[in-house]
Amino acid sequence: MAGENTLPVPTDESARGISDSISGYVAQNVNVTRAPVRQEYPDQAGAVRGGKEYDERFNLSATVYSASSSRTPPFDGLKRIQFRELYWVLDDCQEAGTYNDLMRWTVTAHRYTNWPTSAS
Image (cartoon, rainbow, N blue to C red; front, side, top):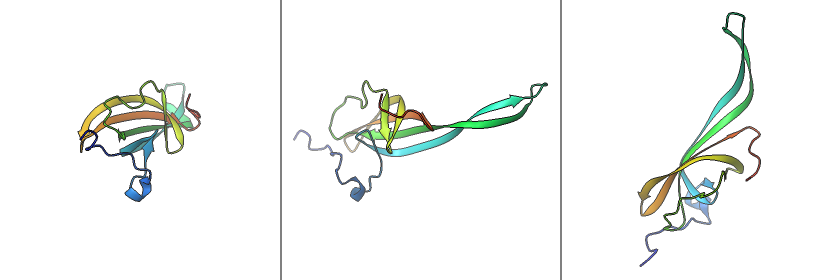
């Protein structure tokens, strides 16, 4: 039967052990890293003598799968995605093959402490 081997995105995600979703897709292998953004100050000889952190950049990577057997990449035409109630700038979305008959994609995105604040 068509659709027999597809797994819908569950509505009771937490009861099924799913704690992360990205703009409606189930997220797996989620990794978020933090990198401080600094302004460094050189002395007259060019050596760094000080600096100040003024922002933070967060990088997101994850594998996502959809509720259907669609082969269309997620986030097609989007520049931003939503994850953990924050918006992220979508950097890349690549096909990652299938797993248990589900089409998967690898997603990378980034954000800063105070940007982006909306979906557009």
